[in-house]
Length: 336
Image 1: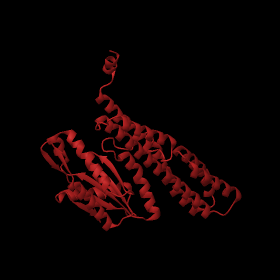
Image 2 (image 1 turned 180 degrees about the vertical axis):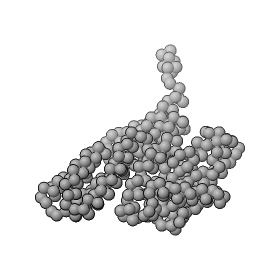
Image 3 (image 1 turned 120 degrees about the vertical axis):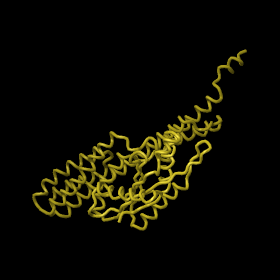
Image 4 (image 1 turned 60 degrees about the vertical axis):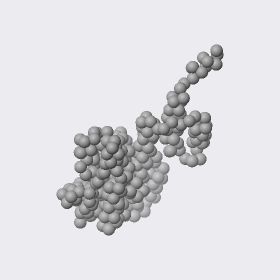
């Protein structure tokens, strides 16, 4: 009798399996950002082994996938912000080096600048970086009185650093990853593009901006519904992400439009990498009931020049995209 009561109070096997699957999703997401040697990570991995051994794991549900996607977005966002913080640090250190190289040596001055260098290298948050920058601005004010050339150089550095710092500070209150496609979004693009334009003017290292648009995307929504349209967007984003190099970036710019930034390129490699993206998207397909859906993409590309601003570069790539669509779609056009 007691055994029967205990049996009836046990949760259904399906419920146990789903809870176990959901728990594994949380553990997998939580451990991604922890170092391999971290003790807490090892404990969680030990728990994973126990769960897998004791419970049959059911296939992933929509909720499981949402949990996994959440952690993927979180990690991508943190990685992106950390990279941008490092760029701001580098820009501030460039200001330090400019001052040191153009000013005559002074004990107090050298000591203050040395402190700036130590503080900026040890800064962990954007607020700490900005505090060092403010301190540095005060040193700039003193230094400006000594040299007209230095004044011009510092003004360039100050404007660029403050612009990027402000964007980065504002970005901390915004999402930087698109919740549907799990790639960087337009907020992240707005932050990245200014930094890259600044770097080009300083280091003259070419990079390319690609504007990508899914051909006839409206028909997917109109014919098969928005759920299928969302699946197309997610799959295309994943295909593009897998087609580019680790040093490149993809952003969902809006709707069915994406932007890709290719670093360290020339016209030949821009065309080659853009074609690779186009072909990979064309090679993929989607199944909706009995229908096998093919997707193609048009791409417009532009390589940065000394005359370009953030706006003009995008406009050149967008114009090339428009021309690619006018020429028949499913093709790449590089603006010369």
